[in-house]
Image 1 (cartoon, rainbow, N blue to C red):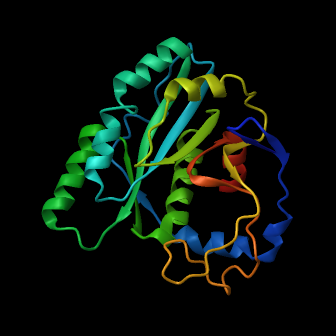
Image 2 (image 1 turned 180 degrees about the horizontal axis):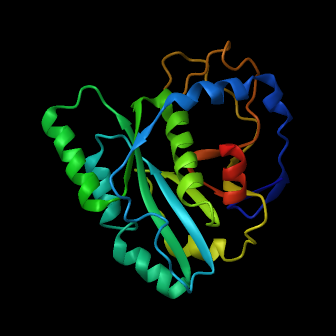
Length: 235
């Protein structure tokens, strides 16, 4: 598989490091989560006949980050901006926010979330707790939802609720890629060392990852895969 990065470099990506862990066991254990959603009106059931490429944009968001989701809906992720890009670039985009649960939410906040989901039709909620270490479940939820509802589309972009995406550049980039290619794109890091400081947000204990460096990876704030890879991971 080719790892394509936004700096326009290409390298061979070696998955042999995965043999270090029983990832299939982890994946099976993680299957217990479920998701709930109102009608996702900004999903993949719409049909834009002129589209030469179709892209799902999934935003990982803390369930209590109301203002961040509002800011994105009023800027780069607005309906008007996405429709403009579709019209000018012939690239269709679906937009979803992926959130978890927070046990500290008040009844008023829970009602606000329900209203948000009903009003915007772009929120998917998993039944796992919000935490930094549950981001893997949040990404898996995005992959599973995309594989279930958008399997005929071309690409999945994962980003965060504190990011600003230039959809014009994204549309131009995906237009240059053949949908059949196995593409994993993002900001590429090589030979990064795990954080061993227990006080660090990114602390990685040695018993969880004993190696001195991580394998090559794209940072989680923004990356893109084609749907063929998403479906392979989903299976």
